[in-house]
Image (tube, rainbow over all chains, first blue to last red; front, side, top):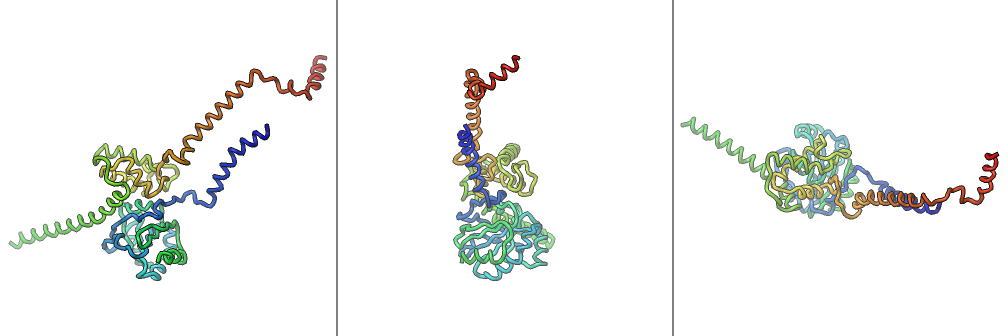
Length: 170
Length: 175
């Protein structure tokens, strides 16, 4: 009788333990992007100067697209790293910031006081953020020279981390 | 004459501004449409408007999970992201995309996570089948117990080691 209870109990408990063990180390709130290894969703947005920027025209060089906002603390933390990366890879990679749920005036003021990096684009209806599956800030997408999304990073990044990814795409 | 020229000039300036704005809207709108075309093809149905559009927008966004909430649908969530997503749903339905096309479009951005009710296939079938399997096991156990109960002798009576003690108790109580 005890052996039977043990067997039935094991049949129920062991699969549950395996399922839980497989989930260790994963952020339950992180959403895996289905865009990895897929073509990046196209966009044509205006920058802060009113100039249109079409993603298709950036082909030929790696592109880093960072969704950010002035209300987002990790975005402020990673700002110097992105400035440094944009300087380091100037002419070899494109650095695009897309404003996520923020006001253009606040973005202009932020850049005026802290300096900018790359080109900052406005996405007033959030259509581009939705097309990329963005659900928070900062979220960063690395796109290779052929326009394929190779990596998505959620949260603030350091200069070495960004450089490591960009170097792999050059 | 100069007054007429001035009015004419003003209208030309307004028209020019309008054309620039329309061009800007066209530049912005085209890629969004292209992304939709690339992902889900042409709209399946006719464009919707009015009450029918609003009703279907609510139904479809009720099937979508708000990515920044705890168990809330896009329709129920007050967050800015959910509002933007609901607007996108409305735009797509207004353009003639079907319910399934809209869900497929969002799934290609956010993965299956976006569906409050995931596809009933593969590992997901567990969600549908596990409760039924547990119910079946429960019913089987109950039926087995009921079948065994009437004919089952008392536990103490079948245990020969306890027979002597039972007899002793019976004698002492009887005395």
